[in-house]
Image 1: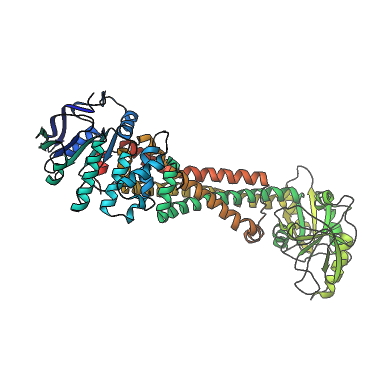
Image 2 (image 1 turned 135 degrees about the horizontal axis):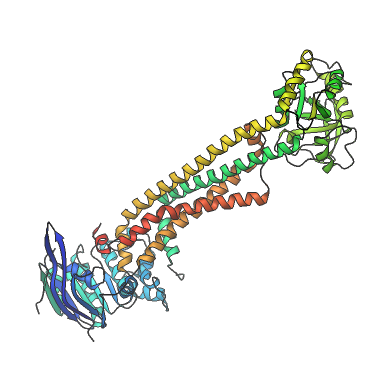
Amino acid sequence: MKMLVVRGLCKEYRRGGGTFYAVRDAAMSVGDGDFVCISGQSGGGKSTLLNMIAGLLEPTSGSITSGGRELAGMNDYELSLYRNERIGYIPQGQSILPNLSVIDNVLLPFYLYKKTGDPTGRAMTLLDRVGIAHLAEAYPAHLSGGELKRTAIARSLINSPKMLLADEPTVDLDPRNAEEVMKIFSDISRDSAAVILVTHEANSARWVARRFSMESGILKETT
Amino acid sequence: MGKRRLTSRAIAVQNLRRRPMRTLCMVSFVALLSFVVSGGSLFSYSLLNGARSMSARLGADALIVPLGYEKNAEGALLRGEPSTFYFSGELSERLMHAEGVVRASPQLFIASFNSSHCAFPAQLIGYDPRTDFTIGPWLEEKMPGGLPDGEVVVGNLVSRKRGDDITFFGRTYRVAGRLDKTGMGFDTSIFLNMNTARAALADYSQYAEKPVTDVGGAVSSITVDIKDGADHSKFARETREYFKGDLVGVVLTQTMIDNISKDLGAFLSIVTVLMAALWALDVGVLAILFTVTFNERRREFGIYRVLGATRRKLRWIILSESCAVSVAGAVAGVFSLCFFVFPFAPLISRTIGTAYLQPSPEVLSVILLASLLVSFVTGPVASINSAAAIGRMSACEALKEV
């Protein structure tokens, strides 16, 4: 069973009296351990596609199936649970909650639903994996851009998701930090989680196995 | 590293702790409301309680006093303002048998001095146990068998206890008992039987600038019960007219209580309106603060959604924050009330110049709990709009905001 199957996906908006297609008839399938990159110019529809896959945005038409379940028709609770348990999402820009410490940010997705296990131990392991275990008790205001991004990555992995979605994860990072972040994603995909990366930076694309391009809402696989 | 549990409440508390100025501002608003509602309710209830106590304690239809001393009599009874005035024994005998009087008893008011031969300035009230029907019955509750000569009973706020000595005009009296609180001038007064009062008046006369000429017969006021069904105002008018040459004034106790009740009613209406207005203002201000805060934190709530929080969960976080603010504010307000108002109750009583009697602990608990409840609901009510907006928020739109 494919991790993700997208078919005939469209998202249209009414703009200036006409219809604007942010995503037009997109199709893709992603398996376990796939490392996929969707690249393209800003405004091409990449983030819209990612938000629909994450269940944050309702498509105008088409279908998204994840782990055999159709997202359309899920209620708010089911969609929220899907985001919490099946996917890890790293939004574009700074996404760390300012009032929680690094460790609490990482732990938060675990505590949104009733679960068992040792979340603190796992959170520390993840922070160690992304190289910021020593900052566990720090607050976001005292972290650099690279450290914040690593916190977001650790947080996205706390519930052992089957699929990781990252929207422009290396933007605003210096080349060394960008390289390290991409290496972490590569390691995650090797651990059998699917990784879908959205970026407009050509450098990031060299890490991935499958590449897609997206221009004016049209998605094409390029390799 | 300790074990953590990030419940909605824990997240809310953390959000409030990390924004101390904003939190302090919101808590202060609720605390102010809580203080005013609990204080206003307590104040209103104490005034009503005082009026009820006064009505029960005065127990006579009218007081007959020397003309021009009507306000002094009211001041002595309501506020314990020391005052000395009297008319002759011969006149008092005639007044006690005036037309329309069914029961009468003399009282003697003596004001002690602020000097070395008096313990402190106070109103001494002498009553005649043989005829008295106002002070005697409730003094009897404390002093079965009556008050012996040479002994006094002190009001609740007088700092003497049973068995203590107390000196007035160079003579020492033994304190035989202490009365319950009345909220009236009686709380700071000293009660003596008529024999002891006459001895005190003789002592007073020695120190006074103007000696008393009729120590043995002088009377300050006569408490009177008027014939059933008689028009009290007519009685007052006719008594003044009949004793015109003797310069007699009449204080109708019901009129006195009615006037106070009327003023009290108007005052309580104002207090109620002010409390309601303050509550509405508080809800409005807090609603604005919550809305502004919510708009500032749209991206933050968008991130919660991305991480898998349901809309219901976000509403809980908002409501938990507003509840935490309300609880802190309500408790701070009531605590402030306990700290500032209770110790100063006697001062308040003296300042407002009317009967003021704080309620029993049971009633007080009900007032404070009700005030806590009113203050507590303020935050959640004010945050309803923000909580509803969460339900309409698009996480994608929120994430685009910086």
